[in-house]
Amino acid sequence: MHVIYGGTFDPIHHGHLRLALEISDALKVAQVHLVPCHIPPHRGSTGASPEQRLELIRLAIKDEPGLRVDDRELRRAGASYTADTLLQLRQELGPDEPLVMVVGTDAFAAFHRWREWADIPDLAHIVVVKRPGADLPVGSEAARLVRERRADGAESLRSAPCGMVLELDPPLLDISATGIRQRIADGRSPRYLTPDPVWQSIRALGLYGACPAGNF
Image (cartoon, rainbow, N blue to C red; front, side):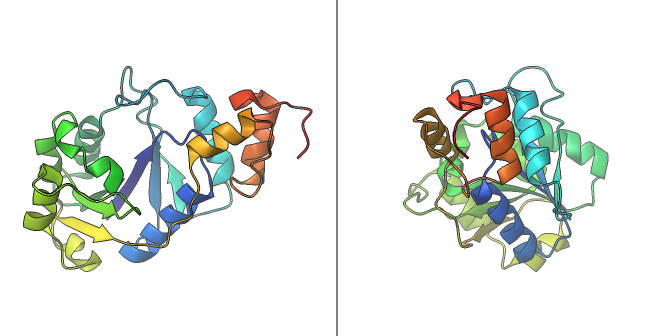
């Protein structure tokens, strides 16, 4: 079973990393693939370049064999669309390998606005991570998909290559990339919110308004 967890990771932090490991445990897979997007289609520009965000991820997961980075979206021109990524992966994995994408309820609530959203269940399973205060709107396409395609558990995802939706409610760390960027811009340290090598690199590159000479 091939599992991907996408996002801007701007910057990557312990909340992302802990969630990826929780997903690995819940689905009983050896690895989760982090897929940083090139250009996010539903938000403004990122605070760090695609290449910088990729390097920060590599620093963050350097010593964790259960996490890998997949840079395919950074190698594609233009905005990053999940359907394109899943189609490419499906072509690589073949028709029978279970493919799983991970998404939070906040993003999944707007699933009907994703490009080619109706094709996604025919390419992969969807694991929806419940987030506090982010419920799926009643009557939405996202809620309908959960109702009609609900998986009984993680093992159910192994029985088919795609088409099921599994809701998970893992423990989450209350950390946001937005909060980290603001903290850095305000001249405050984000240490222990993100791995030390990531913070060191942010300071060295002066990302998000960091002062290289600031206190660690």
